[in-house]
Amino acid sequence: MGQVVSESISYLTVCQDCGAQLECWGVQALVGSSLRWDVTMTCSACGAATLVCDDVPPTGLRDQLLSEHGAARLLVTSAQGKSVAIMRVLRAELKLDLAEAKTALGRVLAGEFSGTLPEMELLARKLREAGIPAVAARP
Image 1 (cartoon, one colour):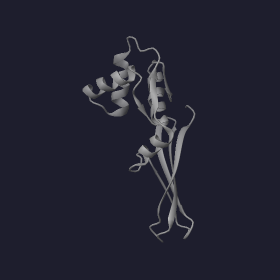
Image 2 (cartoon, helix red, strand yellow):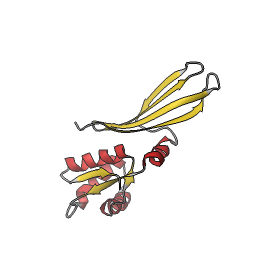
Image 3 (cartoon, one colour):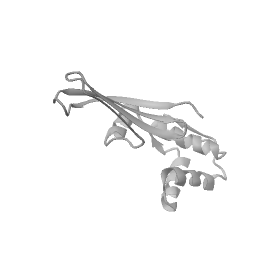
C-alpha cells in the first residue's frame, strides 16, 4: 500500500441549526487504492458538528480544491508501445468508453491530463501496477 496523498480546503457556510457562520474543512485523500472525501463542519456559535465521508466530492468542493492547490498532471515517462495498456487502465479507473479513452490517452501522452493530486496519484499507481512508469506532479 502506498502512502496517503491528500489535499484540503477550508470554507465558510451558514449553520443549518442557528444561522451563524459555519467553519468547514474538506479533505480529499488517496488511502491505499481508494479516493475519499471527508468534510467536517463545526459551528462556533451553537456547537453543532457534522462529519461527512464519501468517495464522491460534495458539489463545488473539487473545483475549489483545484482552484486553491492547482491541478496535478499525470505524466507517463516511457509510453512507447504501451498505449493499449494505458487505455485499459484509463477505461477501468475512469469508466470511459473506447472513444473517451482514446481522447484521454492523447491528453496523457501530451502531458495535459490533469486533476487533483490524489486523483492523479491514484491513476499513476494503477499505471505503475500495469508496468507503465507514471507519476503525478504539478507543473
